Image 1 (cartoon, rainbow, N blue to C red):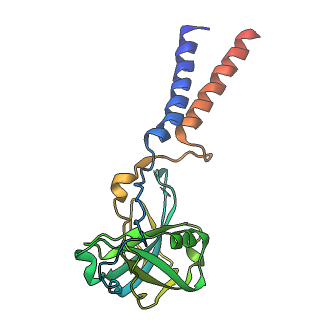
Image 2 (tube, helix red, strand yellow):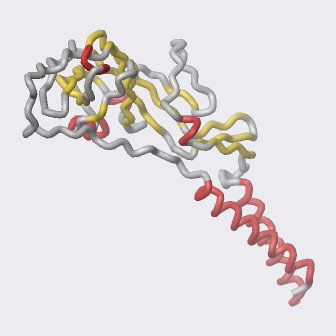
Length: 231
């Protein structure tokens, strides 16, 4: 093999190496939130159940991870995502003692990605006025029904459910690098900038990533040259 062919082959291998190693360096970082600890054997110490959530409202939206404009494509490392955003006035006790919350589905069609959240009590940030629930991108259009929020303390005392809030698909699909919906609502998931990375590059004419397309092209050229030499 000539020096020029060896260098060209090295470029091919380098491109393939860069293409396959890049995704691992740009993983989606999701923070694991520990469920709220409920111990129903704890004494209540005369504490009454927490007050209920008030002024609960809901908004649904989803984020598409890849967008192409002309010959340029951008993609998020976190993939396609769906979200249920709940705004509320928290229970009065939230600032005095640790509270958790749980979702209660009241009626209607709840997709599997939402049903999974109903089994957990999650910690309530005393300063928070909203909760973001991550759902399946594809299941967002199936959302139709009502839910309520319930506050709960460590001893297991539960508040009355909040007033029912209507949950339905808003039709809002945003892009990770351009959060905007037709109705003017602009929402970005908490810590999205920190946990997801955005990559931008040229679009391949045959649907292959550019690096892979170039590498395959160079490989074919080297192979053809090799065959010509043998003749």
